[in-house]
Length: 535
Image 1 (spheres, helix red, strand yellow):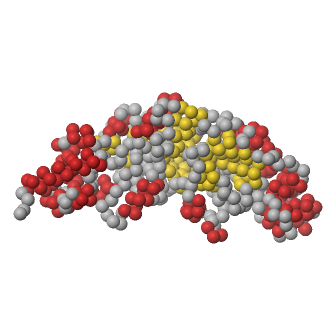
Image 2 (cartoon, one colour):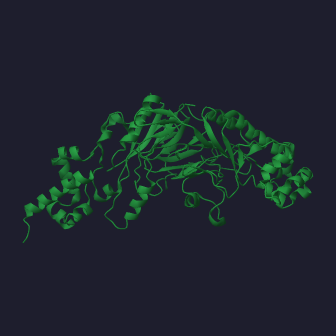
Image 3 (tube, rainbow, N blue to C red):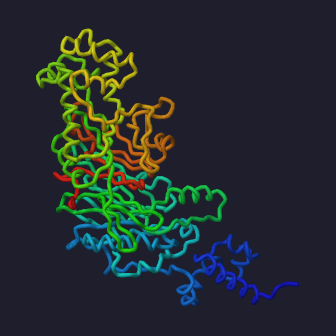
């Protein structure tokens, strides 16, 4: 017996409403198939699922408002980002068809109240909208006029803008192809529920790099697909989805500071050693820090002193130091006569002197910041000394021959060569300094902090992709250029930005990372003589 046409139409509407009540989201074709309604029936009765969505919005608005947490949101011009009286912005992404993380939004509201900041929302299309050609639908909470919306390219100052380019919420690497977009001297934030950061050199202007970054989202992950092939993308998108944002502080017309935040399942997040909670609590918390590569005798004292002063404002539990020793006095890269003469002219050909300066640099950090522990991460520049001794190059080096004979015994006694070298020249290593080996792991929550980042998988050259496979979440150094690729955070350097071997365009940044006990992380940049406007 054939079901009357009017009954089929009624069955489809009843199924639509039941799915909304149960799932709290717009139904898709799979939802209807599970209730015995075919795609052909949807097309014959309503012209397809897209037309059915439009009909429901037009004729059943009250029902959607009552049972479905999202309604169509129009971004009005009077709610666009304005920068005249705002110094601090919290920038995050809202994904279409997704429910807002109310706890995170409540914590962000608290942050803005305490820090006189504004929340800017960057809309991001759901891939299902693209396939079904529907109007973007956003959680009705964003109708609140306190939220600013990015409707077009918007400058926060002369050197950072919010870009209105639409990036798919499912795109695995959302910054792909965007490094060549826009002005060569400007930084951009693009909407995406993932956290990425890439630095690109601004030509030959040393230290004037620009960034492209994505902030994470303030909406819950909700990815589905009616295509079997796309189920893989949906699974990956849900895995990579980060509840988070980027805080941007405008110092003046040209200088800005930025740092990332991530939230836990309840919406709590930490910024600069203070946790903000949806319940209205503001709580100071201890910090851990991963320093940019120090490089001892080639450290930039202005940047280094600024970070020491910055960290001294917190209760610091643990500091990770990378490349504390530069190896300039015995470097295998310095081979020609002119370079050697330049090194001699600087008075930096003496290994014992370099070891003392390296030690003094760490002591300064220790005395100013007063951390509970200092973890010295085994790094490639530290191993310049191992290579120098193993190759016997000290035999032809009258400046360092005698002291090298004493240090070389560490190689036979299975001691840390750099630590032993400092002790040989009479330096006292405090008990709370730990020299990590290449095989040591040092975790904070689920974040690996004990790797320098120069060694890849099975001896291959390292890359962000390879390190992500090896460690998952980690904070590494080595490249001197800050970066974020999902769970991999990379610090920059605290050395001089011109170290002779980085000739031409350079993307080096003076960047450290704060790592909190719950695994949340923030990259902190030294720009314009300071690390942030708040501390």
